[in-house]
Amino acid sequence: MKYIEIPSEYGMLELVAVDLTNRLNSTPLRIILAYRPPGYSCEDNKLFFNAREYLVHDCARACVLGEFNSPEFQWSSYAHPNTELYNLASKFICNNGLHQFVEVPTREKNILDIVLCSDVLACDNVDVSAVHL
Image 1 (cartoon, helix red, strand yellow):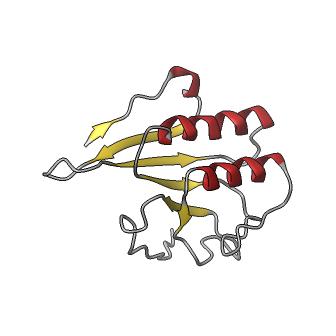
Image 2 (tube, rainbow, N blue to C red; image 1 turned 135 degrees about the horizontal axis):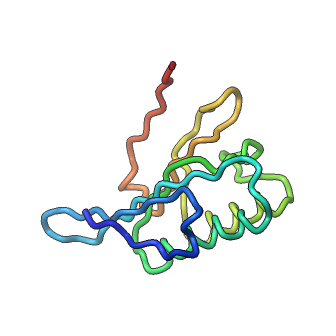
């Protein structure tokens, strides 16, 4: 496992990334853990998605885990409201060939938690389980 250095311009974001490889040193899988709190400004949202673009730019296989706080995104059809936040999210997902693996609501009737992966074989067994605190 190798931690990915994140430029200081993204320091205010809740973000961590690592590359995972097997013993044969095959093509690494970059795991990016990201959280976008509700209430981000337009500039914060741009920075949020710019950071993700930076992390997947030269990466052959990527998996983005976390929460975008975008409850109106319809993952089954990739339909969404025509707002800057949703357009940035959609562009990021489509431009990087990412597929959402969470197919059931994770908060009330919404899918807020995400497992987006560019390699469907790397994330072929995703289960959602309820956690009660």
